[in-house]
Length: 196
Length: 288
Image (tube, each protein chain N blue to C red):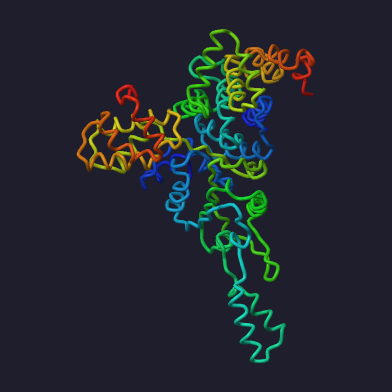
């Protein structure tokens, strides 16, 4: 396996940690797809998106994780000595749009507004509780996305500590507080974090 | 065939179909990997058109299958032409032919009614198979489809097993009417086709409605893009942008203001509630 292939597999594993269900056939497709493409970062991004992502709701988290994992231009993480052909980020133009649209979800503006308000109050966990109670999948996706974004820059080697990353992301959106509220301390958050 | 996503972009642009690179890459990968391309997105962004353009640019035939609830194998794959078979049996019988002979003749290709899927598998040249609105079909049909899309072969018990000489390029479209199975999704290269960006839509408008003034075109696109962000029952599609531009051109309008919108909103909005909601807002504010 080349270093690049290895990174793709690791990246797919990272996606799975964030509840994006990447299948083996998806990973195989991704590895095959990149052999047909030149050393263009945007192509690479699009190829992974087309093969690993199977539903629209996963796109925002994918975009965030891609930027985090493969680095953002120009103030991205230091390049590794793996000789990767890509250096900058994908030209975020259209995918930025997608992110914006999905954030709007079915109720454009409302979600964002709610979130801004709750963020101002410093209480995204209230939104989390509401989303769980109402089975509001869009909102949960949005919060997950937010959690990932809150992580800021993550270095590729951190992927081995995916659990810690997930935990950190969850903390930024008030996961523990929400669990306490929802289940009245019946569960410790630990049982949710340890998936292995 | 295409050798890079850029070539897809160029070929598509030649037939006036403007897409972004992300779309071109997904199409390119689907072709290279010989995987079905699953296109999702709101109505009117050009999902079906994508398949048509793909056929056109690759010199393939387009075979289209529209899905609906209750679509079954006999409508999708093949059916025996019973009337014709009966007629043949009747004629043969009068000539005292025995059953073995008759059976042999009536179960031959001549009496087979080919439906889209079989047609695509038996095609002697490259085809694009468009399976439109796959989310409207039943779950049973979906698993049947999965089987065919896995090995591009089907068996007709009375006849033989048919394997595609040229596996068709398959394009499935979905409006997310129903969330369909993971297994089918896993087989596919996924593409979410969204409304075009401002620049793209402006390019499309200039291509499709030549002779429109640049300033007006810019305003039209900006306005449409703005109202797509509102909570409408049916947001305007690209076709509706074009229709509206054409209408304004023919009416000799040179600018968009509240009056013009009140008079022409019916061109790009199809529900009364939507029209009321949009016309209640000041055009200038929306354009900002």
